[in-house]
Length: 484
Length: 41
Image 1 (cartoon, each protein chain N blue to C red):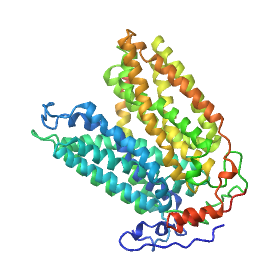
Image 2 (cartoon, chains in turn purple, yellow):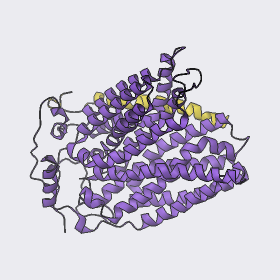
Image 3 (cartoon, rainbow over the protein chains, first blue to last red):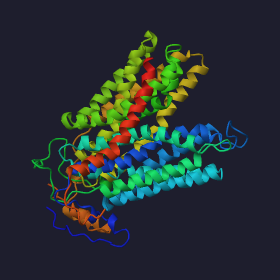
């Protein structure tokens, strides 16, 4: 049990950001924390809807159509790619800082970066300098994405020790749902700012940056961490660790030395690779596999339906994992993913639109579910103390998958088409490769066992970690010495 | 916004907090669902 609960507030203008100022008083409902997390995740989820700006940004000079000097789509595509890349690496680099500084400081920083990224991008659009936009949305905004994404994770896990999957699933569902709000909002704002001589992207960025900053700050004010001795009413923490759920903690950098971390990394990378490539290519793929049966309008509907399943899957699968276990949930993802990817080419041959749609809706629900379940998987393996920081490092799997997925889908299709394969069958090889990836993921998931005791934190190492972070607060949550 | 005076969470707090995130999300989902229905037309 902790004996070092005292904390040192820095006070001053930013004193309210201190972890000590966010410790919940008796009577605080833990159900206030998911909305706080959603305030952040719904905002940063805008990233999925960034493509609505692509076309208008190709006409900043020409207004009605692209003019010489206007940016082209491949150039603009880098904005999103940089943001996702920076997301992964900022989550890894700042993970420990987020964990030790508390959720409010992290959310505040994320709000500054995310809102600021929009403002810098607006300036880049105004002076028509794409590098400024890369820096604004891609780099600064990407840092906001990474810090914001992991900021509420460990807090939610601590508030919901009885339902960690459901709790993190709710927040990460918000990331999937953010595009539903951002997309119509962006279109509406641009239509209001648009004139005969002006596309209206820059003022839209400014307004969205301001809205997102305010919304994320509300989340930062709402969020609370539980008192060290708090537990849900009627909940009894397991005295002894179950086979795959530890009661010990693993220090973030020690977690990286365990095979369990890297097995989960591969499993997540496989799951994301399988989904992310399809998301980007869903519209074209559905039309090419079913020429005449799926029109452009219907394909847009299919993409919308996939987004809903992506979001819903995050809550459904993460909640389900609380009952069937994390390892079993990923087992379902890998087995079902393999079967469905093997089935997709047959739906094309048989001309079964319903079968094709059903396969991809389930696949995409598991794509979202993979993201949402993984924080709880990490908590089961490495404990709650550094779960946010470890999650940050794991997010690099997403960055890698962001490269693998589209490459597998786009380049193999291109290769097949240029070698005379009919467009309707151009995706078959990719589907079988995806199925093969699920076999690798299945094996890695199967190899995951409990973390060796030598990696568990003892009381002394917890104090060292706290001291190196310059914060006594880090030691406040040390629950007990390792059983080793 | 002052943490120090926080006493307890009321139902109103919960309704406001969930409404703040739930209403925009529900509207966005509804809009997406309407668009998605084009798949079946």
